[in-house]
Amino acid sequence: IGETTWGGRDEQADSAGIMDYGSLIYITLQRAATARAALDTIVSLANRYGYYSSGESFSIADKEEAWIMDLIGKGSDNKGIVWVARRVPEGYICSHANQCRITRFPQDDPDNCIFAPDVISFAREKGWYSGADKDFSFRDAYNPLDFGGARACEARAWSAFNILCDGKFTYMDDKGNEVTEPAGKWLDYAMGYELAGEMPLFVKPSRKITVKDVADVMRDHYENTPMDMTQD
Image 1 (cartoon, rainbow, N blue to C red):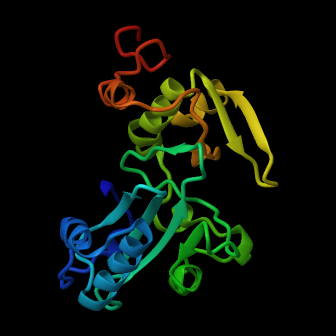
Image 2: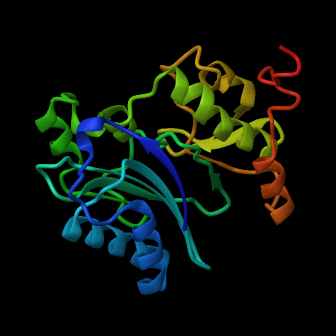
């Protein structure tokens, strides 16, 4: 299990909650043998004991599959969390860096996407969403993207994809078709100029990922991109 914290709406914090994100990680690792069991454990612990931390992204993997889970508390008057989790498709990768990454998600594919029963209704109740269920975006409701979220956070996810995909993002469109487009299509989004964009959640890397590849991504400083601070 890995994590990045993304804050979220202040009114969703629960100062009386017992489980913080670190507790969720280590207690879940003690109790769950698979990634899916880990998802169930995290939800059970947070809903039973209350969730203390702010918004969080978890990467959860076992030997067979990997999931990304975005979650946030429901406030001091509503113990527990709202959340959504998506399975990383075979042959694809995901990246998150302190910004909620799951936007719209399939609501009829439990093998690959599961979510809190009230994930949409809770947002409606709070006045954070009023559209059709099918158009609901977890990120837009619970961690709306701003310039800082794009330039300081989504930019790092973009750069990781750019490195591991050799500058071309292969992803699945809304119709389930595999599409390949240059990474530059999302450059203005990553730089915070175009917040209406939506970078793919999953992309297909150009090669199998090694430990060295991960290290290169983690030590990246946007070299050879317009965000390289030595050039501007």
